[in-house]
Image (cartoon, rainbow, N blue to C red):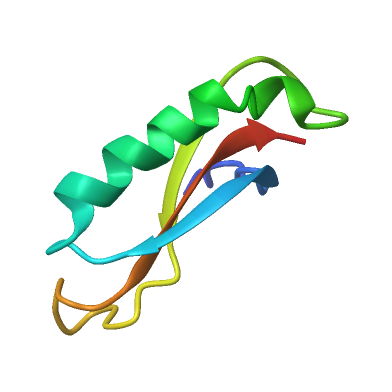
Length: 78
C-alpha cells in the first residue's frame, strides 16, 4: 500500500474575528474591509508571499451544531 506524504502545517498570522453564523452577515464583510483598509497584509513581517488566507477555526460547538462562536483569521502564511 502506497502512503501519501503528510502535508506540512501552515502558520497563518493576521487579524482574528470572533463571530457566529447569526452575526456573520454583518461582521465578516466588516472584517474583510478592516483587513484591506488597514493594509494588514503589508504589515505582516516575514510573510512568505502575498497570498491571503481566510481560516475558520476555534469552533465553540464543533461537531454538535453551527450555532456557537468561531474565529475567522484573515492573514498570510509565515
